[in-house]
Image: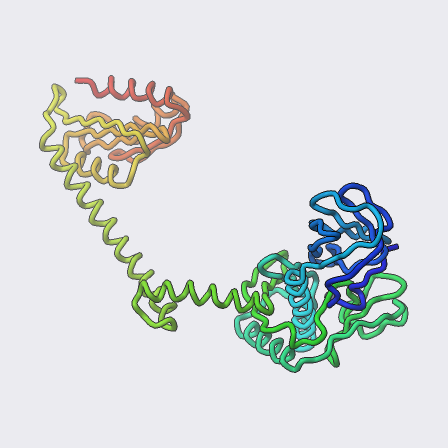
Length: 390
Ligand SMILES: [Zn+2]
């Protein structure tokens, strides 16, 4: 059984301990301050006798320390916990207790689960939604409770007698209870700061709906400051693009996006008009064949664009004409014919597409379809070209 030193002293970061078992990269100590991955909190890192600790595993009664390289196999060893990583975990974890406590106290919303990530942490809470006003109030309240610098204490109670826990514990026997003075009592095996002031600022970020509940993303301490700095840098960069003050950026982005959509719409209209005009002049430049028709056949490597369709319409609209586009990728075809042409576009193309395993159709003037392969496109093209041959 490994004695867990972090249970009673989360601030212990340098200690000496006796090796009770070791083989190559795995070490068991008599007692340890290294926290194993558990309850949503990641494991500690650090070193044992100079060898890097890369994983700490809770095996029930014992804690295994996995090392990056083989180390000494017996005796008493010097152990160092990576304090920056550990303290970050302690801040986020205690921040989670405080956040969950305020959510319960003020909003009657229970916390379902917790995950402590490398950059951000999340809790899943039992509610269908949280609006922007609630999030702002929650953030304000949780920071106020933090500034009150309430003591965070560790106590032990038998599961049968442990009362007033925020969330009932499924564990039996002796429970480790973490309390935030006059606010919260939770059964938890993790590491926490001594008082809520040490959590530092608490920043709520993204909300996400997950399986009918809400996932709240949050960051505490220096991570919150770092995140706010990144947000400020990103916003400043956008503000520079607009040569505008930071606070004007959201309004400017909204108006510019609407303006851009309008410009794109007008540009598209102009491009289609230009393509139709090109179709008309191409009609003028195309000689009349022996059947009295002007025929234009175009092979394209890509697909059939709206502009090509407008050009075909412009061409056929001038009368006594047929415009055919054969596109390679995806294999497709467009047929535009003038009213009064010897065959209608829709039924003619539909029949040929069906013959060659394709799909599509259209009206008497314009038809379009797709084919399963380059071979079927070539076969259909042959049929159409012989139909159009002078
Ligand atoms: Zn905890």
